[in-house]
Image (cartoon, rainbow, N blue to C red):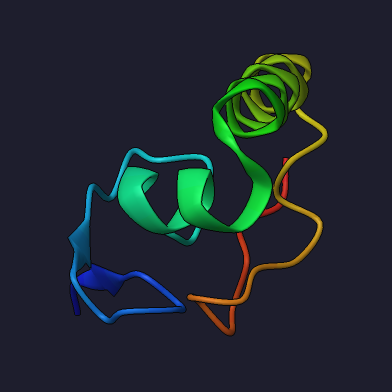
Length: 63
């Protein structure tokens, strides 16, 4: 099952740390805040804190 943007339903990379596309993210939060959100989420994934739950996948992975 492909990952989709929660706003416009376009395809989003399975490796993406966010559940929305760049266009929608910038449209909702603005470019600076969008980049901050993505950076923070990537740091959380690297630390292993990201897979506590997921909007896209009902069965989230646990470490």
